[in-house]
Image (cartoon, rainbow, N blue to C red; front, side):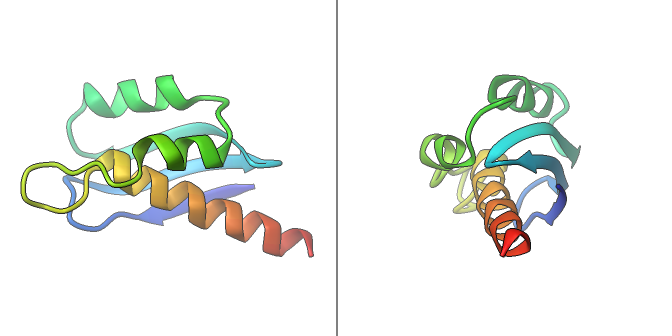
Length: 88
């Protein structure tokens, strides 16, 4: 299932990903710091949504109270919930 997530309070504006049976693939960020936002998807490719959420949730960037990693954690939670709802 493809999922797009509009980010909040980060340089990136959108996270696009695919989720299948709780496994996250093809993560892409629109906008933001090019190097970091190529590294994060490479690191989490094929991870379970819950593992991404555990590792990245709560990471902040400066005084923003969130970060691109934290936003990815939120995106995979939303994608996972949407996937489960679609299966019902």
